[in-house]
Length: 309
Image 1 (cartoon, rainbow, N blue to C red):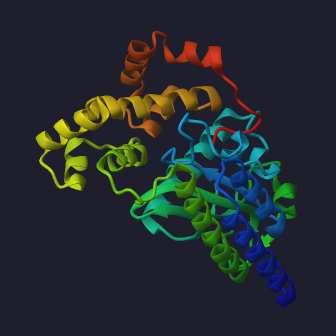
Image 2 (cartoon, rainbow, N blue to C red; image 1 turned 180 degrees about the vertical axis):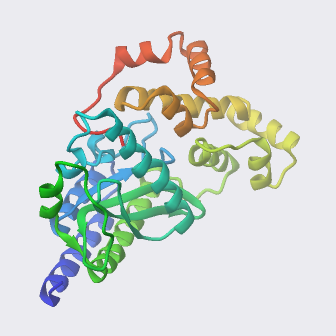
């Protein structure tokens, strides 16, 4: 990349970052900030909110509904016509990429099954993977992968901008800063930092950040430096419900959100929200809400134009 272009982008980037941190916290400025980054860097940004962390107290997303979609025309191509393509994209950009993000914990470039490259930036808070930031899409540079695009997409693939190693390193460093700024803003908005340090906040934050994982009372008790029985008593005393009830409430809140805003199957939703399987999720959902998941989806779905991953 030309030195003058780099200097211009860096200058614009730091001006945006300063403005972003100076304004009073609100949910709308997150989306405005991302749109500004896309314009400045000339890329498309996607965010997978793995831990459902970027939500307000009512469970509403802090980004636009389309922000979770890979909106680039190359990513969207063929997904409406080929159901298996949609499944492959979901597996590639969700399960496999999230696993890599948790393992690497730093920026990396990944080539998808369609032969396109995206930069991936894990957004961490301590040891928790809050979200995954994707930037792209690109055609592999001369020093990159030789992946072949699907039939009929060769021309679209050749039109993508190339991503060489130096460009990837530069963008990766910039996007790490973007991710850090978003996490800092999240802590301001939701007051999930440790300013109070009270146990009620600690309990709620633990459940919020880990509900999609295989966790139990013993894990929270360890964090509280208490025995499981003492932790159970404390949770009921502070929050008026058992650990398991609070965990189920949080998981079902996420299930309701995914039912109305995605095309994920019930099994995919179960896997994403911490349930063992679709059968158990369906039975519990009906018991708690009075309607089966599919009926709830039909009644409330507000799926935007875009893909499910």
